Image (cartoon, rainbow, N blue to C red; front, top):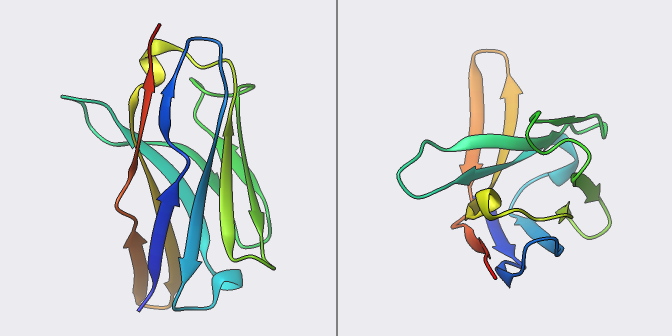
Length: 119
């Protein structure tokens, strides 16, 4: 069973940076696409960054130029580097992995890590 464990969240001042990690276990990491989602209080969960198994990245417009997603196949880990943090980036950040096969989709979520941007 695939498990995802996020870490790296915390309280940071506006303009600061954080590096989130998503540790993957229990499956073939190389085959999975991975996304970082966030959910602010009272709002829907939204995709902020994603990376395919081949390393192709995609970002929400609201985070382009500030967020960078990357993956390390040797460590089975996906990272989200967050720079120039804004109060509106405050949310629980979730890692999601997905593997698509004909007729099936395997999708897993982590437990989330809280990011709070406040002075």
